[in-house]
Image 1 (cartoon, rainbow, N blue to C red):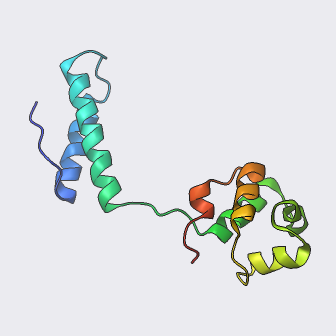
Image 2 (tube, one colour):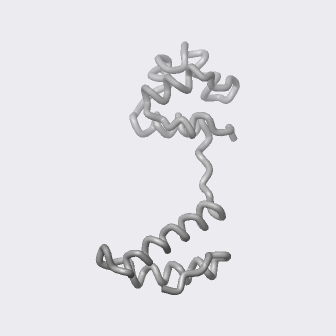
Image 3 (cartoon, rainbow, N blue to C red):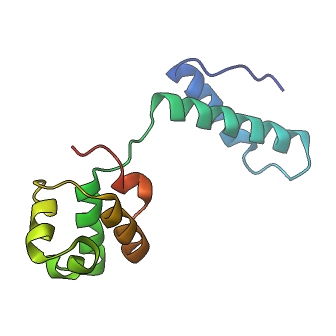
Length: 119
């Protein structure tokens, strides 16, 4: 097992090639242990260099609305009256903590999406 840190994209490609060659290793074997180490190194490198930021809160709400076929009127339970829903969706009013909690609980939108910095 010749493992070294992943410092650049060329190292990353080499790590992927090695991982591909041992990916089907039988559990409990040295190759399976090596595979786990490569997966950990690759994840660490990708998280550092290719981190994916949570989506904009309003875009997350609109996405969930589209997924579930919701209208702005359906959001009144979570945000407040139609005027308030309109203000939030048009970025004229920020989400309050109470709104965030209700949207998370009712629509299962992750907190990290609702609390992210708006675009």
